[in-house]
Amino acid sequence: MDFGEILDRWDRSRGGVYHKKEEETLSESPAEKRRRLLRKKSDARIDLHGLTRDEAWDALESFFALSRSRGLEKVLIIHGKGNHRPSSAAVLKKTVQEFIDRCPAAGESGYSGAREGGTGSTWVLLKA
Image (cartoon, rainbow, N blue to C red; front, side):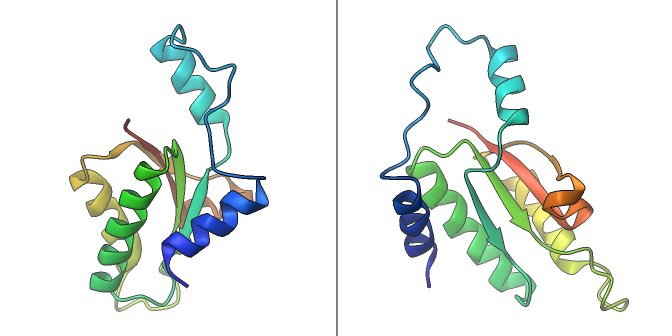
């Protein structure tokens, strides 16, 4: 299943195409918007477990492009903690951080709470 199909499924589960909340207006200050986005759950997620570094990078490029084209504001990247392969020392986690640092669409990011994977997943605010 490709990312388009995943997001289409997500759209259907929410009753249609994603639209920003109507109560969000142009008068929302940057500080209010940031607080709202930090509190909100992710609009979409991608799980990179089992991918190589190059596969993960390609998947992230597609995921971010599709997420932005759909107007999503916050995404979750599940990369794992890297505890299972000490010789590779969290390759996916490092790859995700490098991708976020280089991606012009990626804004603020951080580790998720324990319920969403803790340090094994990273949320990212997407730039408009």
